[in-house]
Length: 235
Image (cartoon, rainbow, N blue to C red; front, side, top):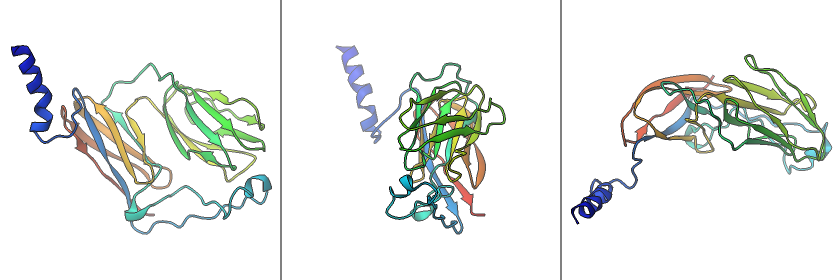
């Protein structure tokens, strides 16, 4: 009976303390990434050289190197623990998938762990090629005609890799290869969350293809949500 009463008390603690959710054994590090200053205007992309793709758009698509939303929120920022967490030797079994559709890479920025499988799919009726330009990993360049199986690859070393399609020069993407599972890529609202991070001191890094890299030293406390924000300056 006493054990049951104690269990009931422990289960009710989050409500008594006014907390809607508690992560036992870890903490959530979350926040937003914004841009200060005048955001660069996106440029229209001409796909006249590839009519099959051009006809998929009512209006020309725009570049994705600086997508800024209301209030300056910044999309496609990779936020990750760069120091303080142990390297993770075993990658997830689930592959990361990037799609070529409408002569664009989707998503524009994708994050994965070292040695995690990457699959690149061609959903277009035209040929593409995938050409990563790494500095620490092996460079490769693979053609992918329509209807062929996904290209499958892995990367053995951490780095952020620009990727292009040699056939369609406007097609660009980035592979963020990381040695940790504690990462996030900001969406339309500029927000990120790194869940269930063990207590300790860490270096938190935010990377954006146009505005560069920022770091913050953070201290994570058991069961405490830690809000962290990054502000990049317009160039």
